[in-house]
Amino acid sequence: MKKQKKGFLTFICSLIPGAGELYMGFEKQGMSILITFWGIVAISALTGMTFILCLLPIIWFYSFFHTHNLKNLTEEEFMMEKDRYLINLGYVMENKEELLQKYRAVIAGALILIGAAVIGKSLVRVLWNVIPMYLYDVFSSAIHLIGGGVVGIGIIILGVYFLRKRDEAEEAEE
Image 1 (cartoon, helix red, strand yellow):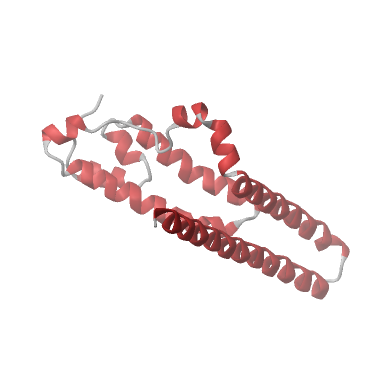
Image 2: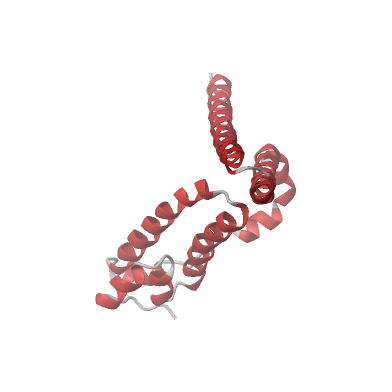
């Protein structure tokens, strides 16, 4: 049940991603934020892709300010606010074939990156016991540099792709 709440407990709950929304009765929003936040932590821990942890402050700030925005709505506006998931799963399921075709390259790249990170992390663990320490340090540094380079190149390619799409859309309008 939704109930607009104001006060110290709302502030305390807003410090935990998703808890403020849950406290006010927005279960879908709160659970979506909570699962996204801790899902990123789990993926980072399992794959060794610590660079994705940079998304956590974004999610935290979104949740914090969203809770305070809900708190500051008028009673009428608050009651009109709908409880929604962060991702519309119904739309995704209805259009999954179209979305897979449209984002196939992005999905494939992400899966390849995650797989390479898992293999790299496992390989470093194995080499820890096999090779001398100075070679382990060199190899470990190389794995981290390659991982960062791949991510950087991927981001650049994605940016160029979006620029080309924008240019094509502008040319089509003319």
